[in-house]
Image 1 (cartoon, rainbow, N blue to C red):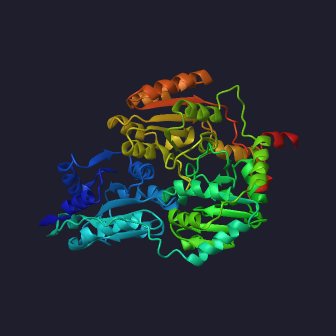
Image 2: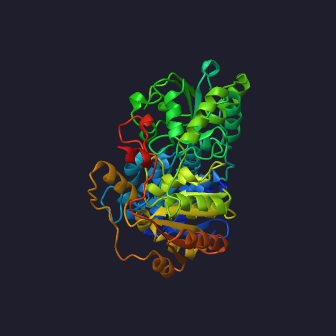
Length: 559
């Protein structure tokens, strides 16, 4: 059949099973939007307040559902406004397809109105990108983009389409998409044998779980693996939920704001089994002293991650779930009772604690956990509230914490929450933000109201840029340069002005009742929680220090 480029875009999205797209129209992409209007009963379009919100929404949709998220933008500033969201997805290996439209082919390279080389700009932050100048190649390019985004190590792909290509006509034939199934045939049996031998020789093994375990859908295989190895478990921020946070073997997060139990345990173990993590500097601290008593076994789908940040003893390259299946079949049951008891003693000696008599970030997170019974999708911005959400909410399932780990994007959470709620409408979705982050994306409350997306927005409002202030407090002699936000911005009035419900909480009881009411509401709710400006995230590891040097408020008081 003969179709124009815009029709092909929509038909290919339908081929790929896309039911929702997030975007913002403009001149160059009008043909696509006109066609999208004709198919509005098949593909839902969420008009965000800003293109960056659209890219974060596509990311949140992908993280929550496991499907490819899709965002649309026009040329020039529309396309460049996607860049931060694309980079966020790239750093956390999230599959999204960003479709932009550019000026016509004859106008490319002439500094035409709203022309930008978006493929050149996004080359370092995409898994692959395309500019399609021939309409006959458009359908195959879109199909290839989806395949690249979701296969192997996932990631974002951008397709740029000049406006005249969206109106040009060519022959189109529907194609049933190939099923994207991980290939286990290339997993080395020698590597599996070497890994099994290391595990069976270890006396103090520790399992460190990263985001790859979530992306590969390896939770069940991971639990079996941990049972067989009989080892304590820690995780990274991105690995939350792959292994249940309520399990007796779980010792809390690792790294700069990890628990003392995990940091001490990893520093003392004789084998660190790394499952889908890339040794971020926020995890390792001083890399020369990281797990210095241990052999390191790394399991990852990307061979480029082996020996990149930390020198390992042995690697197994392959899909996490398939590698764990092979190891589970090969390993004998292990017994490390004494080692687990040692870690249990650390957990009891160094529990997570905070000031229990005031409204604080940890209290807010624990109350959200209690009222949602651990069954919500938690989205966060970046900063102190993000760390509290990681520390005090017990994630028992994968894809239940959505947060910007690698890029650390302030302004990520509200757009991502909209995407998550759109993809999982039956789930309670809570975005936890600091007041600094909320200022960066609060316009998306209007999007939530416009499309009646009933998310709960919790603002942990300390009137400062909390994490930066914490560093200024501890390492910059209390010079609070550009981190104080005490002005007349009223988030309750702002929420009401955008059509949402706004509530202020100044005490624990205020928050309890406000959140309970928000859970029953069928509309967006913003809860402005007033906390102390000097509340801090504990424990902490100073920059450049080994993770075994974790300290907390009590340690600080002893100095």
